[in-house]
Image (cartoon, rainbow, N blue to C red; front, side):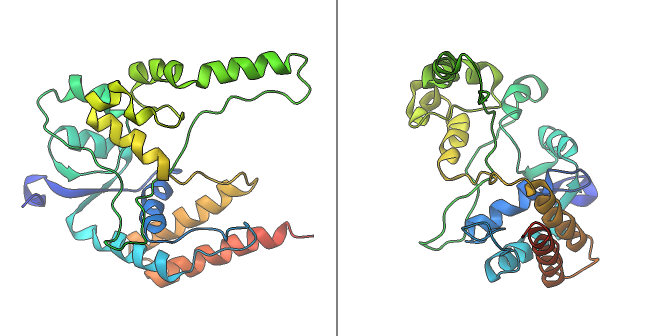
Length: 243
């Protein structure tokens, strides 16, 4: 009912054509299906798995009802009521009231398979306060960091910025979020989000997944070949640093 490409309307928005984005759109489907990039101890690639393959095949199956574009183009099409469903960020809460004041929309956490063992996973990112190891004001810096990240202080920033949520546990039940269910969905999603590991080669691994998934999106390789290719690249990255 939503997908009418002849009229410039599409059911879904799939990301492509820009780095550091596609990974964040595809992997939530894989994570929610029990898949991952690395083993629990971070020593080996687990990209070429049944769970990831199921997720990738689902992602590829959306092609017939999708507009494949960059994130800003997808967001703009959504504001113009030309896309039914998109994966996007909380930054839209800042622009929707002015760019599309009459748009009726809903917000939900990332979808997951209908199975009891699955969890709604999303990509998790954030801003990190850092204190230098040899700082002469270490204790004062820690106090400042704790003050700035305290739930009520973080919320004051989040209410203005809209694009971020407090990391403090339980803030999704603050009166502000109870009164703004769309933003609350993002705050709730933090509880089950997957944050990148502290790995010096992580960006290379992310690029490997992203590059091979995009090849599959444009029918250059099969889903199986895409995961095999990403797995080989990540395995090579890990092997190169092994003493």
